[in-house]
Length: 603
Image 1: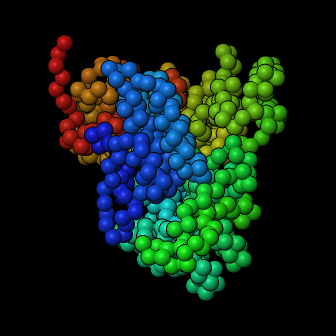
Image 2: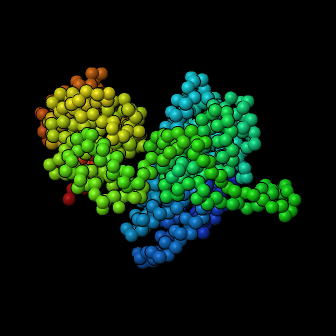
Image 3: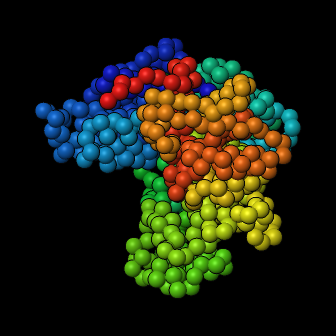
């Protein structure tokens, strides 16, 4: 996949000036809020995710300009942030990005910059996850082994995002799989973003494509063997309506007429549950000159009135599915989680009773005060805290929520691809572990199995089977005080495990790296991490680990399995996850520097 189209360099936002494409690949350097607003309005920067991240960097620029002698003029920054958020009204990501960065202002300018940089990195991860889910869905719906012909509209690639892309990201994934015969690219009126930008990205990626006028798209579906339509989105409302570049609505109608899947690919940040329906979306109207002429040449009589909306809104009944980094939201794009508090409480109470939650704790937790506070979609994350295990209580109902949430996050990182990797939580003499054969990006609270620590057997027979690596988890629980275990496949750590296993078997030593402190070893400056051989019979790996931990009670709570990933444990899921993140980061630094040990001054 291509590198990011947006960067922060020496106090400036640096991006590709999309107005110059395809004739010129020109860099645009932005150092003022006015320049950023002009870039967004003139479509030098465009695409919902791209303007969201750029809006965050706009807050950084505003904060830097409003800082004197180390003191930030908060009111001035907030006023500038409001101007940025209003630059374009339809795409929800712009206001989202501005709001997210502005929330860090109380912690200083560096905190705002750190948040913007995290959003930049996060966008690439999110896009790749959504693109992969969408490619999987297209192949599943089309149900054929031959390469597919897909039609797309506007531009949804790395120019519209920051890296990979959404709908175009899915096309890239299909192309890499050898599953894409051709892309039909709508020119996309009025500014020809398909012709100028998408065709340029297709050529850059080496993807076969043909360009067509927007009004020929329906005929292409009828005569050119189009298998699916893939588009992006600028806003998805609570009822599943999709705002996207003008022309999307007519594509959805034509696709339904021809029985072709119409799939929307967008990040979760594009879903706007605060807006009830498509009728509530403000559709931006563009200048008449964009219709009456192009490239400085007038093509209509002087004074001709125009209707030039930048977007249209596609109702949910025309959408086959909406796909985000969390997977397929479902046909008709029925958004998840849009319920009243009373419905949520009633459903949760019933589910929790069914899987063993103590009745006396339910009455305390499901009270009227919490119901009154819950009537807003933003509060959905509170469920995990409300149903955390109180002192003296245990059971699978209390841990499955956290397992699913962390698994989805690690999947987005690319560390639990497909069905690989697993997570568990100790429950007295049992453990709750992720089930076998399930995509971690789509994992729910129901996708876990409770097993005996003594022998890894399921406590109850059922359709769900425990992960094959369960014996690794139970070996750790039997020999340590761990309350949670994470087993993942991060690329740098896995690669290092293969390299290390080729030598004489011995622990891998790291020294001098600051990240060692995050691994939970006995020393802050040095750690020896054991490397275990891989076995086709996974219980043998568990037996090796158990033997080693019994013989080395002071061993660090992380380990390598050659070619099989890494395992970490701790007092909570968060701590175990943090440890594998620190290990992967240190392995990446080792890859970049070629050194596992660096010198540190003694003090």
